[in-house]
Amino acid sequence: MKVLVIGAGAREHAIVRSLVADPSVDAVVAAPGNPGIGLVARCEPLDDVTDGAAALAIARHHEVDLVVIGPEVPLVAGMADVLRDGGFDVFGPSADAARLEGSKAFAKQVMSAAEVPTGLAHLCTTLDEVTDSMDALGTPYVIKDDGLAAGKGVVVTEDREAGVAHAAACLAKDGGQVVVEEFLDGPEVSLFVLSDGVNVLPLSPAQDFKRVGDDDAGPNTGGMGAYSPLDWAPAHLTDDLVSRVAQPTVDEMRRRGTPFVGVLFIGLALTSRGPRVIEFNARFGDPETQVVLARLRTPLGQLLRAAATGRLDEYDALRWSDEHAVTVVVAAHNYPGTPRTGDRVDGLDDVEGVPTAYVLHAGTALDAEGALVSSGGRVLSVVATGADLREARERAYAAVGHVELEGSHHRGDIALRASRGEVTVG
Image 1 (cartoon, rainbow, N blue to C red):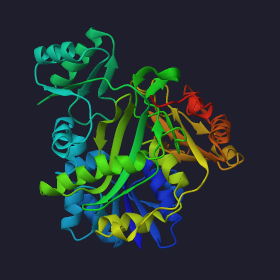
Image 2 (cartoon, rainbow, N blue to C red):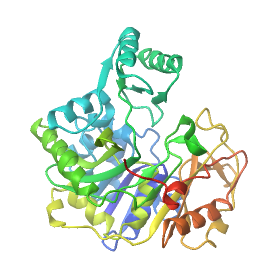
Image 3 (tube, rainbow, N blue to C red):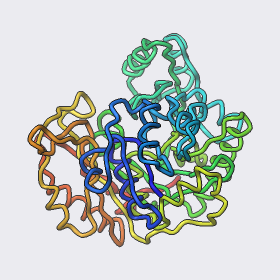
Image 4 (spheres, helix red, strand yellow):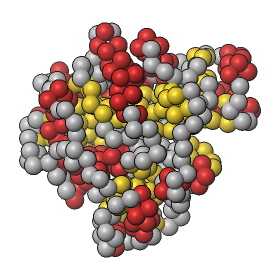
């Protein structure tokens, strides 16, 4: 089959890399893709990643059999609907179903109806409501923009003024709303669950690192690294989350007449009171996808098409490598603020000398001379696998050491505590 992948980041590069390795996939087209994806697949221009009509034209031109939509923005904008109406099999939820990510308030409503364990939350439309909710729920304050914010719409702080300021900025947007939530203690877990609208199938859990600096210092980002599997997690965790969270949510979405087809990303905390869902996303997460797909041995193209066509019940279980995987994000100068772009990226050929390591492009472009340069905040995801987490970390960081990008920065503690056996569940 021929597959079209929508998106331009490291998540999409990871998806393309896995699709190319699937014997049932004859060709992969990416729109718009990036220079790294262009080395293994055909890239087509897509100036506006929310332009469903343009994506439909690309799908028709290449006569693809499956479309995989990577980012959340085109999903919330309804690209999957346009492509399905055009007669294509699509892995990705409709606009109505993607509201699970597009509106945190809507996600909380679904969680309540499905009896999904989650934290207390208040939807606020005024600053007075925000401050009252902050007083009611206490510190640390968790203030979330209700809409999409590229992973940077959440502030968790002990500083009341900082929380109020973030809420004010969110409310200042057209139709702005804020969700004030109870802080959830305990280690965080990311779990991707595939859904065909009826059946669900979990992938391997991962853990990501959201703050920009070591020891979780500084502001939130889109994610600075991740690892999988989670040796410290309870053995029954995935089964528990499928029965208590994923299946009830998919059942509730179907009951509402908006079946969820795609991947339900469950972000949760393993609190002292048990697992509690922090948020839902309607697509593969970045950077967790990079480590989860690094270990998946079941052919990805066949799996995603089964989800897109209502055939997930054909799979009893997935096949996984016994290895551990780590990814480290190399970010541009000043990220997560306004990143500097246009800096040369060198040293990637030397990464090939590190066993199992490889580079996934996120924010890269080719300049007028054809040189690789930075074009976004998160520039690269460097991935490596190993027999255990320690070896995977060593290889990933050895590979990062070969990357040359002026002013770049990365966290030095991705998966460090887990590799030392220091992550525990209360």
